Amino acid sequence: MKDVALWTISKVVLNHSHPCYPDQAEMLKQHRELSMFVRCTIETHEEAEIRPSKTYQSFVAAAGSHSKLGFIEKDVRNYIIREVRNISEEDDAKEFGKSRAAFDYFGDVVSFDTMYNTNRYNLVLGSFVGVNHHGQSTLLG
Image (tube, rainbow, N blue to C red; front, top):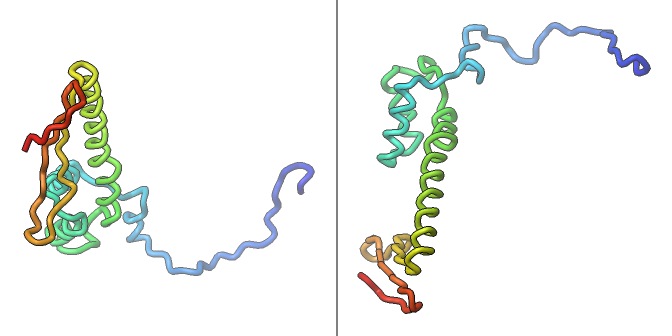
């Protein structure tokens, strides 16, 4: 009834299009949770550059099966993205602010870039480049 903004139920179908398993309700998103131990382990593995899939598999191995964990692999990945990496982004922003303040005060820059690596030896190339207050560039190492 549009004029009074009410709905009238005219038909109810009680059968589902999929089976319901009440014993698996704990895996619904609102019931999944990462314990403090799991969070600390994820953070430690992230610092050691262990892939999230390997981290999750270590929890599965310790628990004995996927069904014995109170979370899924996507929860591990979400925690890393939302909690662990955001902290480092905030730290990067703070460091950038310190660098800008140092540049304003001293007027020179030192840059260290390790984004390039060689194909032959797969070694990281790091070059220190300094720019003094006269605008002259110097290769420092």
